[in-house]
Every structure is written in C-alpha cells, then in structure tokens.
Image 1 (cartoon, rainbow, N blue to C red):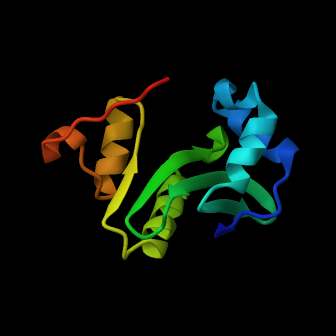
Image 2 (image 1 turned 30 degrees about the vertical axis):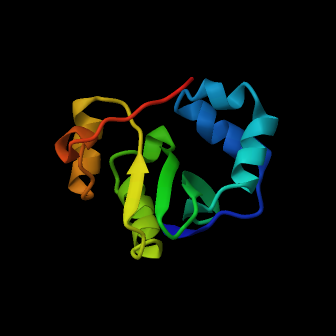
Length: 133
C-alpha cells in the first residue's frame, strides 16, 4: 500500500468509494463533492497498485487548524491499517498545527480507532462542539 496526494480527481472512483461505505449524502450531489475536493487543504489517497482503496480529505488553514473532513476505506480493506496510515500521514504533514479535529460516529470501535491515534474526545478537554445541519 502507498499513500500519496490524490490527483487528478476521478469522479467515478470517488463516487464508488463513497457509495461503498454508504455516504449517500455526498453521492447525492457529486458536483458539490468535486468542488469540496477542489477546495480541500489536502487529499490523500491510499493505493494498492493503482487501485484507490481509501481517501482522507482535510480542510482548514493548515497553520492553526486542520479538520479531517472525510476518511473512507473500501470495506474489503477496512481493519487492515489503511485508515491508520492515512491519518498518520496527515498528522505528519500537519505536525506544526496545534488543533487537528474531526467528527465521527459515536461507536465504540470508531472511538477506539481515533483514541489509538492520539485524538481525545472534546468532553475530555472541557469543550463541546456544535453543528448546524
């Protein structure tokens, strides 16, 4: 497996990846997703040979804050270190940034995954978060 910056954008493979994990809110508006990719701070792809098997998309200013917006791995490659490798590469690239955040499902396995990578719940920091959806 290799991790590298994702370019050029290929709509069919991105749509297939998002659909494979059930993220239909993104696949319902593929034009918006493509614009989101274009405006992202960093997009990393995980590849086996030339096959895209995972993606990480980060947004922010790259100096004071970075937000991991999306991290997806094809189901056949989950729990094989792909997601961890993507996150570690992003963390290495933004090692100078004080705040790196993300939102995720509140499931035991997901919480354990991010805790193992050094993330802490906002509640442990005396903070809370808000979204307007």
